[in-house]
Image (tube, rainbow, N blue to C red):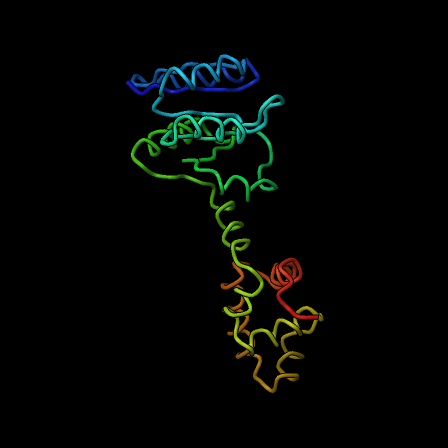
Length: 208
């Protein structure tokens, strides 16, 4: 039997999630919403998986995770939420969690995440990983990653020049510019000129 501790301050959501999970014959879910009971449970019992709502008024899922891991360093924690968590992604990625699940996904995804966690996997939304991948680079790292030619192209890109104008400025063919832009997009993990310019400005890659 897989024992799961579910913590959510919204009782209807918590009880509904418990009912869905317990449709799995090998899942046994304990649902709590009072912090004192949760803290007591941390001290007295170990669960196979802990499922915490990220957004809770008295104690966020992230703070709850930190508290639990102080007591049970090997605990497997999954955070789930119905809110936008991207503004918190640095903090999320620094936590020793096993997964993040949106409450908007099909319930099968939550079940899959729980089972994958028990097999030792960490499951995170792809867009969150991409955002972390970009933020984990300092502007010095990205300057080292980009060639001098690519930096010159980016300078003209930020100025709003067309491919032909960039080619004329750098004495290159438009085909060469297109080829270099493809490489730049890949390094910045973007798919368009607009996104590339946005990342260049956000990460302050170019020197003033």
